[in-house]
View 1 (cartoon, rainbow, N blue to C red):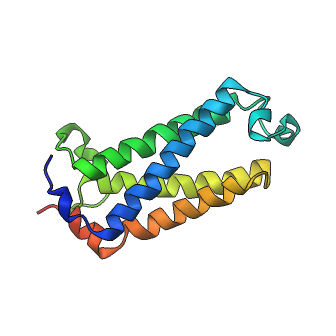
View 2 (view 1 turned 90 degrees about the vertical axis):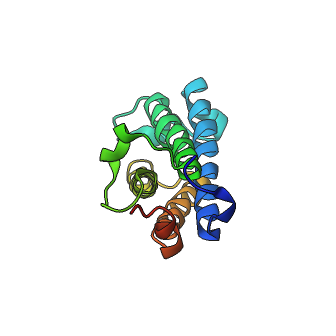
Length: 155
């Protein structure tokens, strides 16, 4: 571990909490869709998929499990530990921030885009859609705050 995590800025704790919540929800929701492709266990209907390229919730469930579940948990881990994995340095979007910060930005943008696409393709179905969209917006706002950026600044 490269950093002393006892001195994390409050905004970073909040960012990690948002990503942890998103990840745990993504794992649960994705698995629910994979185990019940009809979506009925989540209160979803196959008729909601009419007009989309999906016959059931397997592909959306796989996406949610991986991108909204596993990836956010990886981001939390990398934000917490700031691992020095030189093979991932190419993931740095900015020149002076650790790649884990870049991944948190990417995750926030993916969540916001997914939420928008979900509303376009499926319409409003459950309050969790709004919660996830707000988590994406909040995560993006937290990630660009100065204390978070300073924590991940590389000299």
